[in-house]
Figure 1 (spheres, rainbow, N blue to C red):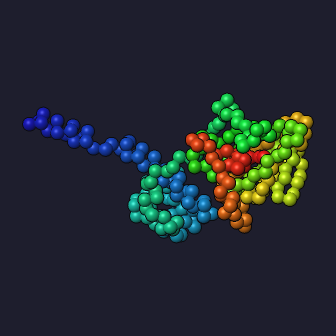
Figure 2: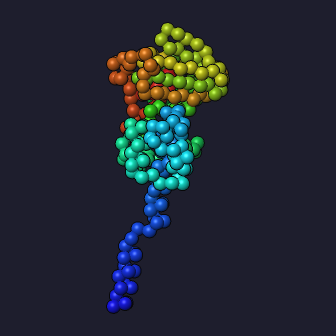
Figure 3: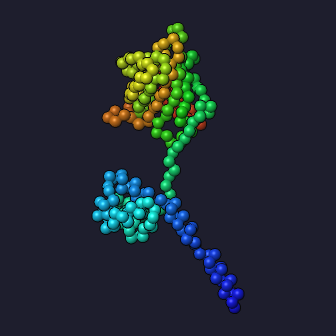
Length: 244
């Protein structure tokens, strides 16, 4: 009988969740860090949070640093202060987006829709899913004799920073020359074009943003000009959105 009791005792012990596993499970939820983020987002001090929850500032400090584990009752008090459901503290947190694009991995593509390209571009964000902007490196070459820059337009906004060389920009009825260090931000639904303004190629970083600038309605016709490469990233010439 003694042996039977011993076996049953061992089996019971093996079926129980050990303390170390429990602590690790709690630590993985980063409850204290989540509480601290909510508090700082509201610019709220520990003392103020304590007044709202009925918990001491010292206890909240220990809670945020993971030295104590909250009861569901205390966690509910904190959740209600920040208008959060209790499940907020236990849901899996999404991984922060972080993607490196090595130079050797990029593909250099020519301007499309023309016989002689006026620029070449490389996508700097093609590996990022559901991106809210499209960054590019573009190199503008001197135009051939009789060649004209092709104007284009697309939804959203566009930003350009000149790295080297000289670049001519036409935006609607406006024209300007940009040099290394110059930058421009504009409504991309207005017809615009670029051309190399020097004897040597000009390099630039271009970012096209999908949303229209605040206060600038997006014309319905602009959406019709948007293009994408099948199976590939959005290109600068989504109506040549990087340049023309």
